Image 1 (cartoon, rainbow, N blue to C red):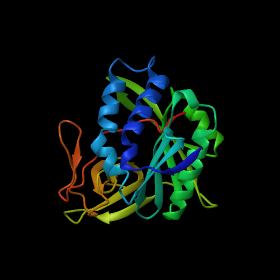
Image 2 (tube, one colour):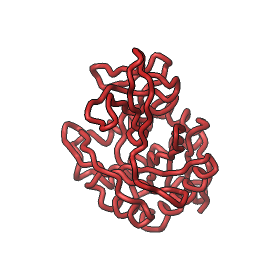
Image 3 (cartoon, rainbow, N blue to C red):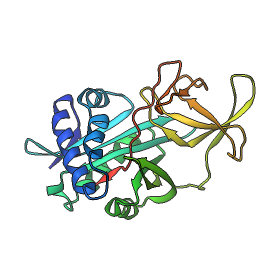
Image 4 (cartoon, helix red, strand yellow):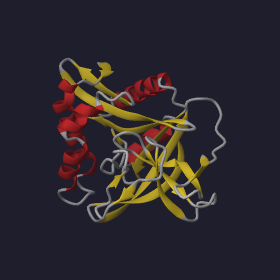
Length: 251
């Protein structure tokens, strides 16, 4: 088996692995139709073709012969700390428990180090027990929980984090910045959403994070991002939040 960078020619195979992997993990858990809808939103062919060619995205496939048997995708977020967010590690359900997921994660971390990444993060639904155990077994520490809505139902999402250097004091990274009207705002670099040109970070009006202000756009370093009635976030600079994603491990 070989692990290499994904290319545009791999897009159809990646979509197939993603669909089969999601179905195997959640067919009995999620509402009917959610998996098909998620595949079309997250793994549309045009979007994947763009992702494999982005400079800030690490996109790898595990290949045996001419067949893609797994893939992993992560992107690099540059701010005060360079973070690698693992979007996906998918393995063909017929090839699970063979160490393919571990090999993909190791390769992703090697690539992320080359990008200067200091910390790697992943999010996993609590219902995905194999995914929770996977990150725990690979040295990731629990980093909090949130609730996400999927198909009209609420699910607990667990966040995991692991530093690629030696030390971590566990503190939330906040940075004080001036808002559009000269007010002092605090950007939380531990809470971000992936977007087309660079991540959006949550901004607060106080250091204690009791009152949320809105979004800080890493592309233009401004606070001009707004959310519409459909939950889409877009900044005046053209940066747009991608569809919400959940669960980084389908092993």
